[in-house]
Length: 273
Image (cartoon, rainbow, N blue to C red; front, side, top):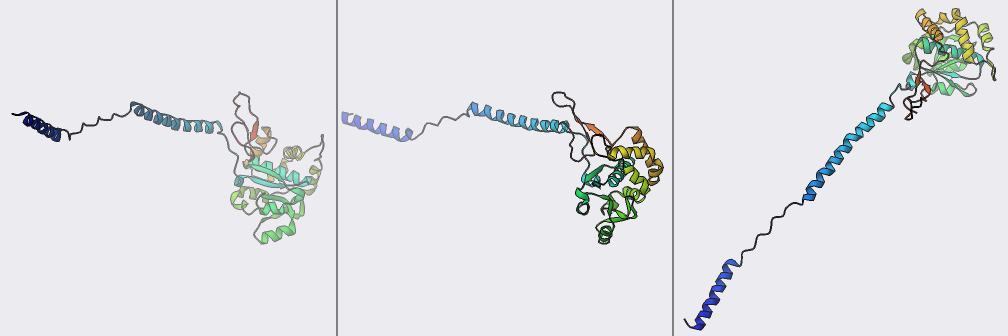
């Protein structure tokens, strides 16, 4: 074969080789997931799960720390309107003591300024007015705003014992007791005259407790024997006020003993200080 023919044949063979094999592409290398990404994700999930487990435990511990007797709701409290009148203060204290320890009901004696009991009673901020104006009581009773008891106020025959209308449903036993409330006016006046202010004075709680001890023939007529027995037991147990039970605050985190509070006081909360 002549030299030109050899060169032509070589060129032809090379062209055919490129046309058949040169079009194939080398496969791209397979991508492998980064090891770091695979190990980091589970770690984040574990942290989140740990946080979810710890939060309820902390909440439960906090709730357990603050557990204890809760103060009574407003509807359970029996609230007397009180003002600066010795017979009113004394009669309120005596009746409230019997209701607290004889009927086992939470009591609050609430001061109203200058005897202005009308609005607090209508708003149910107080439940009992032991010596209300008779004409006002008639008017409000006729309108269905208050309950006027049939017995006159022991403070004065011209005055009335009036209650918030909810008392018939909330505390019918208290209503029955107040319907029997009766005391000789001279005896009440004499006992109330012992109340004096000042450093060496006597307050209504001292005079009232003495009355319950010495004048049982009077107040036991207002209640049955079982209730009278409970009241006398409270006196023997040394309960000198209306609180049915005192609760001690839990010791603080330093181990110091907490002070006590009355379980009937709606302004107090249980648990640690």
